[in-house]
Length: 132
Image 1 (cartoon, rainbow, N blue to C red):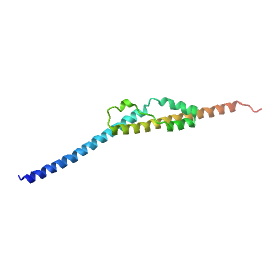
Image 2 (image 1 turned 135 degrees about the vertical axis):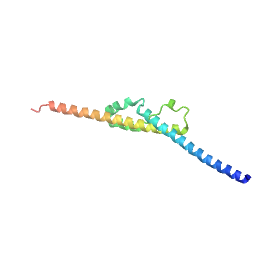
Image 3 (image 1 turned 90 degrees about the horizontal axis):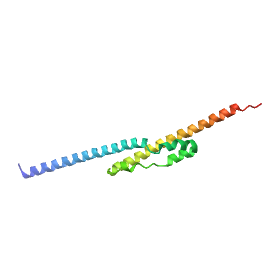
Image 4 (image 1 turned 180 degrees about the vertical axis):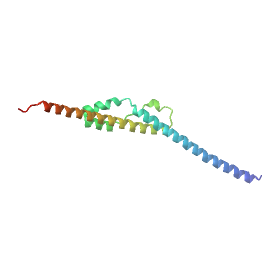
């Protein structure tokens, strides 16, 4: 076999292996990203301060909802140790979005609950008053 043909076959093989390795790296990065998103969604639903937002909505009303919308929770740092920068970025963003959505929902439910209690109390009091 001619040396030139062996050279071109080697270059051809090297190009194919390079393209395949890029493909495997992309698949690995995508699996890392999907793992980060699933972990952050699970952890964001179980955020440690989620019990605060229902009373905030009850006692602060619309201000509690606004505070819940503005406050951005921080993810637990122990979950991010030793992870890639892409994992950390996607995990942090997803965790903050999921936790903020949950705290907003809890604050809205608390606000609605307190307003229902107020309307119920008003209806009860006005029904007990006699106008004679």
